Image 1 (cartoon, one colour):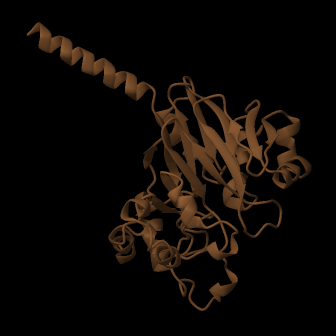
Image 2 (image 1 turned 60 degrees about the vertical axis):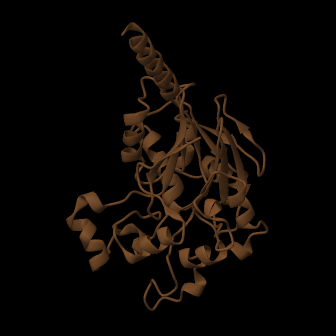
Length: 307
């Protein structure tokens, strides 16, 4: 009897220790910049979410949590950051974990405007490290209202460089890389995230894959998780609007491009950043079934990916 008790106790402490030292990606939002449903959209696909709040989805963002070092990191500061920081607090409470960095991808509304919640009208934070590429750094430090966050010390802007790894001081290494996109105010980057055992890439916004000098299939093969731009599912999704002028890779195009990958490699692909018109937002849709049937995945809020 005592031997069984000791074995049980040993297994308990082993499991507790493993849990206490987890490092993982937490998906906080999956929708395109404007969220779901979108402002002024009263068509049936949006009305279902207006009428049923549990169907609403937040703008795309992920966090990385390092339990061993009591550190957490946010990737993109969305208009929904208030709710997303609450969800992050539920798994990594502020009293025990520090927000050790916010990594911005670019200067489109769904990816940086949440910084306003760090300001004097809201949280009034002190010295939150915000990592930004040179043009993004200059844009935030030289234009209101963002420059006020810098002047008041609510955020500490840290300039980063293409391909240069950022040692966070925990078990997480983050490396930005330039990607082609609509760059009116800043560059656009994706991020490679390396944990103690696994790795991920986060590319919520990019132009067509063929416009990039890097083969996205090689990127997928190089990591354990690839969270990739899924703004639109297919051509024609916007009715009469000419989608040739919108450079995002369609999910249908991406799946065709990735078809030669092995089944295990396909399973690494997780589609994220879905426009309000994208049927991947609709649970039980034929498009969700198609993605899964072809061996790929789509992001869900609350999804956890161990690093």
